[in-house]
Image (cartoon, rainbow, N blue to C red; front, side, top):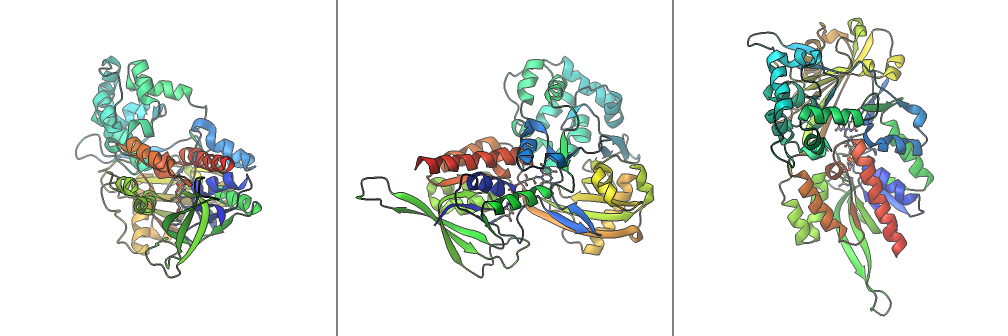
Length: 499
Ligand SMILES: Cc1cc2nc3c(=O)[nH]c(=O)nc-3n(C[C@H](O)[C@H](O)[C@H](O)COP(=O)(O)OP(=O)(O)OC[C@H]3O[C@@H](n4cnc5c(N)ncnc54)[C@H](O)[C@@H]3O)c2cc1C
């Protein structure tokens, strides 16, 4: 019998496990895949240590930096190249060629703080900028909250801001169109600032002023996956067992009567285990080694579909959660290219580019020029060699690269990189290639998310010995995931101390 069983060894699970282990509780982490870390993973391409998933963290709230400091890694925090990213957009006029422009600086999720600024006009033209400026003159008709980010932006600033600025950013970060994103989740405080300042651009400016100086994101020297290495090492010091290749497939509460039967029974949980045959995909459906583990507390830290599937058999109120209107998880495929291309030494698109939907000639939705963004990687890379990472897949449509062979995807990525970076590149310049499919790692903060999440938390809160955390509840991104996982760990610690 363990004190705590954490199901899911992504960052959420590892952080919650650490919080419990530091109190001296016995903790086991179950991880379906062959390595812990979930979407914060590393891989080697052409001899270079790269991030295969998350590559940075938002500085908002200072929560990640504080956690990293606690792991003793503060000296390893690095800022990205301040050059910033670009936008790759359809032509301003029908029949013209696509245009590339720097992403306007003073914005939030692409919403401009200064609609008439030169960098905004380059992206949306004078007509778009004047329409966006009308936001300053419009009354705030409704004191309250707009739910849809897309509707809010479209109504106040017009379609050009929506389609050429906000949607590309929303697609890059959340793989979802702005119309489907819940404002309060993706831009906390924006609605309130809008009511106070009287305009959307005023609200954006207020949020920017309140934000810490410098870049909105940071990384780790050597890659974000070093966070997972540090977490795993720390868990090892506290004797936490991380069982990889082990998926939880079922969860049963066991109530044992205590003493003479007058006191409340003692609750524990029996978790059914399976070893997925396909460890890489963590596909628990093909189990070949059933077994069980028992613990007093269970923390679920798996993606939405897995968590809801494990919860559903626990009772009608749990089954009702699974029946809520959950969005399909957004799938993203990444194509990493290591290129011998001295023409990229000039960093033609800063740290990369976001591609507006419908831009002709490009299938990717974003490109990160990784060697331009992170100086630590550039220093490891021979002269003239570059790493670019392209991402494919927007919500509501199948990932366009799924049916492609590795050679076909590498070829498409080279073509897309050429178009986005404005530099002629050929397949013969490819020194390394890797593809990574993230099938269920992004749970978009779609409309209605806060209400669905509240219902999950309400039901779980009243279930002794059970807790739940992870990006699907906290919101995507380490700045949301880490504080939520810390809170789950603290709740379980408190529950144990109460016993
Ligand atoms: C491509 C990509 C890029 C990103 N970039 C950034 C970024 O730059 N900055 C940022 O802040 N965020 C980024 N994110 C988001 C961030 O990585 C996630 O929000 C965060 O890592 C989610 O952590 P998690 O532990 O909740 O979920 P996950 O990382 O999904 O972990 C869940 C774990 O549960 C395991 N699991 C599943 N089923 C079972 C089961 N039945 N039993 C046991 N284990 C199971 C999975 O294998 C997985 O390891 C990115 C995400 C992706 C996909």
